Amino acid sequence: MGCCDTPGLMPVSSAIDILLDNTSPLTQTEIVSLVDAQNRITSEDIRSPINVPPFANSAMDGYALRCADLNNNMTLRLAGKSFAGIPFEGEWPAGSCIRIMTGAEVPVGADAVIMQEQTTVNGDDITFTHTAELQQNIRPIGNDVEAGDVVIPKGTLLTPREVPMLATLGIGTVTVMRRPKVAFFSTGDELRQVGEALGKGEIYDSNRYTIRAMLEKMHCEAIDLGVVPDCPEQLRNAFLKAASEADVIVTSGGVSVGEADYTKDILDQEGEVGFWKIAIKPGKPFAFGKVKGALFCGLPGNPVSVLVTLHVLVQPLLAKLAGHTQWQPTITLSAKAETRFRKSPGRADYQRAVYRINEQGELVVATTGNQGSGAFSSLSIANCFAVLEQDRGHIDVGENVTIEPFGTVLN
Ligand code: AMP
Ligand code: MG
Image (cartoon, rainbow, N blue to C red; front, side):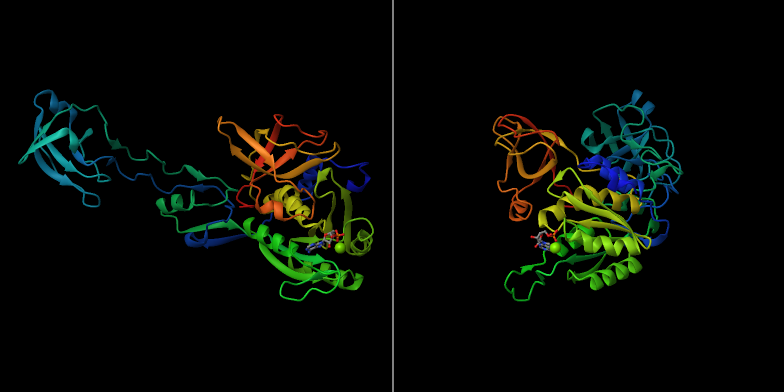
């Protein structure tokens, strides 16, 4: 992959480019019913089979009429009614009007609707207090969508903004991309499962919870392979099992100096792997490769590094694999630092921070304090990353800082 040859630390954007260059979208598709379509990604353009609305209808409760009739007389005789689902059928004489409700079909010949608030009613005589403009309060046929229009392009994630659109079109099943299968495990002799008692020198495995939660938010099929000790044979078995079950293997730990050798030896035999040092903090050590056809992302062990590298590096890869061509990284904004941010030049920092609008209406951002790569507690009080550019040093109060508010994957 050429990634190991890069001298020094690899900029984040270069790492993402290599990850994407080595990832091809899945090709298999599935047909799902509309009730199961949320969070799936369209595998083809969806065209409308019908016009929406399918017939010209009224935007108001009022009276449908011919505008020209009001030139002679502002009072028209009521000739019938058109209600939603029960349209007016038949002829209606010149100088008359039709009672009409919102969404009801506009009778043939009517060229405007006047809302009922602009009338006085005396039995069947309706007096209009306002004149009408042609087509006023009429929603024309196909006004929203024309039959044959592409309403949802290929590669769109279906959300509450698209699913009802499909229902509006009468589309009951959708062809979607197969979801990426991602097998994951934690590595480390020191790790205990939640529920077990901690022995001396042991800690709980939290990274699998981070990985699972984020994979689910990224709409992947998550396959949990548990905790694997730092033992070459068990690691090899875990990699082979993961590769046989999944499109992507995500691991935590075992990629920093020293430990990496285990993983490297196994992957050199079973696939190809590059160990990178990325100019990102936290998250510098990262491994990427292929194991028997599966992509492999080896995350560092530190809990905050896991979350940051999943977010920054693995997320674009999974989006491409999933065929989510409309995927975009979370928006970034410029905010004014209201605290100092400690930083050394050399890596792009993803610091946990809190943004808000201050009393002067400005977007400001403050550090959450402890930025240690194991300090998970400062994540839950944060609402954004302060993304501090690679070459930047300390940031003083009042300087501008790029922030990335937490989006759907981290909320
Ligand atoms: P490693 O990259 O394996 O050297 O791990 C770096 C640090 O992260 C060490 O302090 C590990 O104990 C810790 N760590 C590794 N894996 C996990 C995990 N699954 N959950 C919580 N902490 C971990
Ligand atoms: Mg370890």
